[in-house]
Length: 242
Ligand SMILES: Nc1ncnc2c1ncn2[C@@H]1O[C@H](COP(=O)(O)OP(=O)(O)OP(=O)(O)O)[C@@H](O)[C@H]1O
Ligand SMILES: [Mg+2]
Image 1 (cartoon, rainbow, N blue to C red):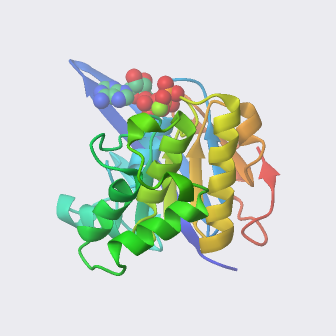
Image 2: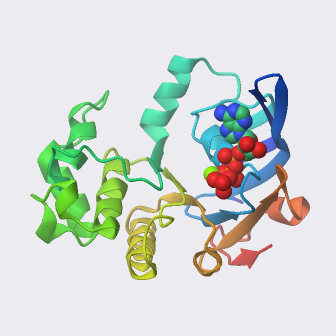
């Protein structure tokens, strides 16, 4: 059986707000396998973004371990975490965070130019990714000349610039109408099919979640049906909902 690409064991995260300690995560156990497309749903404040940040090395657990490709990243230094993020993780957020003065092509080429190890020619790689995401006719448009769904597809291309094996998306369609959201979902499915990317997607949208291979539900910082969620799928892509 394949090893999990992402594995959380007893992950807790206490955040401090003034004098209060907020237990944002309270013992999360889960495994995600190569090339799975997994949804994370749950009420507002249930810890979805906190969990995604910990998976992506933007934050560290208060207790418990998080493994990426079998490597425990829960106790790494800031610079070691930066290396993991650069090599393994792509992030997509609800607000696209594109650079307004740069074209679509330039926004995607930028992280390729600044990669620690430059593996691609920036412009040709950026063009290839944007074409794969159906943006080939918008290469030279600036963000304010693009629709929300188009901007999000540029942001996805940028997240994939250096070919990370894992793509983490926090409410990537949260700011989009349903048709644009649909295009973004199709783009993510195409990425997975083309590159074998493992995708973890936080969403409030039940219909979107229903189209993932598997859905994990967070409530009050814990995964519901944790035992089932932790059970590995037989082939890494088996649809299974919790
Ligand atoms: N920087 C912070 N400092 C203190 N508490 C925080 C901080 N960020 C989040 N929290 C708290 O941690 C808990 C989990 O927050 P988180 O953002 O992970 O929830 P979420 O499930 O992503 O919610 P939403 O669906 O609204 O985005 C919440 O109770 C929140 O108030
Ligand atoms: Mg959130």
